[in-house]
Image (cartoon, rainbow, N blue to C red; front, side, top):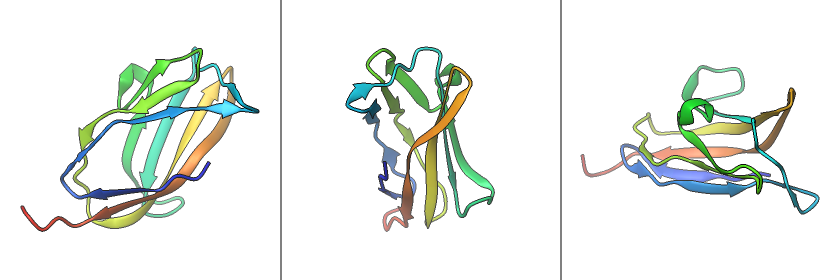
Length: 110
């Protein structure tokens, strides 16, 4: 699934809720590890790194029904049109179900 975000530098990024389905069935996230990385380009340095381990940026909210969220936080990285993806490790199988652009624009008021 491709999903693009737009965010103003230094503002609060509000929670984003997800439900992961495969063939209209929820993917069970029990014992899953979810990771999200934001980079300027493929293979570039990591600008943001979120994980569900200890809820470091991602929280699994209803594992059986495939629901998780990106936690609310202030994002204050340089303005740029970044790329990101969200990767899932479930029972040793790694899949990337979500990806897209993460556009950060400059703010006017500082």
